[in-house]
Image 1 (spheres, rainbow, N blue to C red):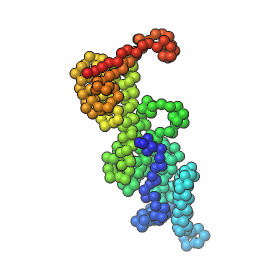
Image 2 (image 1 turned 30 degrees about the vertical axis):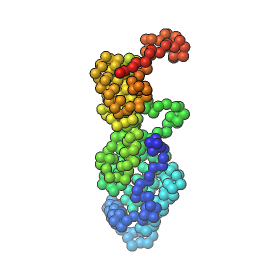
Image 3 (image 1 turned 180 degrees about the vertical axis):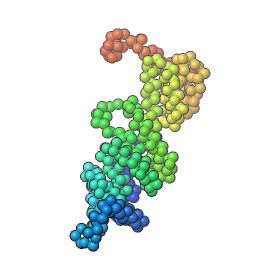
Length: 328
């Protein structure tokens, strides 16, 4: 169910959820945008010097402010239609045009948020992240800056972006975890800065899924060490999971790994402590038999395999599995 979070539709910027409101900026924003346009016009006039004087009062070369505003709104509405029809390529072009032509317009900041969303939905994850970083840097006090943090977390890790990922089966926990860690960190930043954000509940659910992936990744490494007899390294990985991801679904497997490692290392007290915690919190763990004894199937080490078995990758001359270990 948690995996479905990363394959569903994502919310657009909240200020643009209502199309009627999105096409009519609030009065305070209109006054602010008008002031910015006046300042920009004054700067242009100052840079051009007196060359503008002959045109003052002339009808031919006067700038029609209403026409500019109408053109800005027209481009913005075209972008909205493209977004509603999921034509994200066209929406990106229109929003980039809007931002380039009207950097101080009524829709400038909202267009930046919509551009982040459109890039994310078109799988331009790096573009979405850079756009979110830019928006946060330019508008740290914007009322919807939490949405930019939220999109940064989404863009950091999006399953299914690699074509081979869907064609080649495999455990996600055994793949590169850097994007997962970055996504987890971005969502954690969102929750720490904006705990009351409307995106906080969704971010928490995604962090649960990401946390489980990170924990499973550590256990995959522990299993690798176990299969090669590196018991201390495997035990350290299991402890890392218990210390850093105590609420993950991998907790029971980490405890079982710790029981196995400590038993084989002859650390009976540590093994008993881990087994006691496992039995108390996960009595239905598959390694427990009907009588409640912890039965662990021993692993076949490479030293027990013949050269024929090694050469055929375990297909031929398979060694007999050692008897299971019963921990009382």
